[in-house]
Length: 348
Image (cartoon, rainbow, N blue to C red; front, side, top):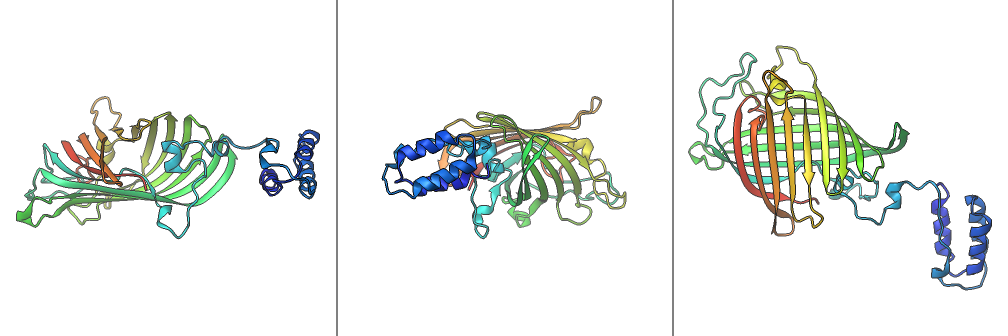
């Protein structure tokens, strides 16, 4: 493999050398990359002219399947996690930012607005209900960037890439002009991710190990936060992809814990399923969470549908439906059903 690039460069520079000499080199040194390279160098120095199309095909052992398919269309999971290492970014440019979770802007309506948030933690229950509307704007921005990459050969993994990611989700009472249209909730979610690529073209493609912090940055009694470490597997078959994650909450002291019962409502992991047809005009995502309790089973389901309706070159029509606990961090123990319609922004 280490001689593959020099061999290809030599062949390109020697496009006018004799075809017979190249054929002889390929035949005589088929199993010896170094000697074949020397033979090509010698052939390139001759004055005989041959068309480049007559050069013999060169097969180099050791190419990974990801690099071998360099000319093939990249799948969704390959693109968003750069599993084939083909993305070539300028480190000073904006295109180093990659999409992480979905990016969208919706007008959303709930059947049960959380006007009096509460928690089991002392001093974290709102005494007087807020005057909130059931309709509001919801938007999410989410991106990541890689800052280190390493080729490895460990337990079936071939690449290791480190990512820093950030997701922000906000709920804006835009129609509540009687109260100056306040932001009801904003959740901040930075994370660090070590992404291991298997090199597989189908099936299991990814293993993520992550550290995640989520908080709403508010003071008591509305303060909510938690920290998690997680392991996440990624699978892909054609137009369908699956991300399955399990997490462990980092313990906090009772005095600092804003929400000691949060895992009872938010569960211990999630599943994200995504389908996108070959024409890429639409996509469907299904997010599931569950606390895995047989006696008090609680969960959350969210469906996102990017409709085949273009809104300019950068956005599409987007519909969202959700039900359960944890629509936002302040709502972690509040059950509701929401319906939203708006726009989602495409990969950049």
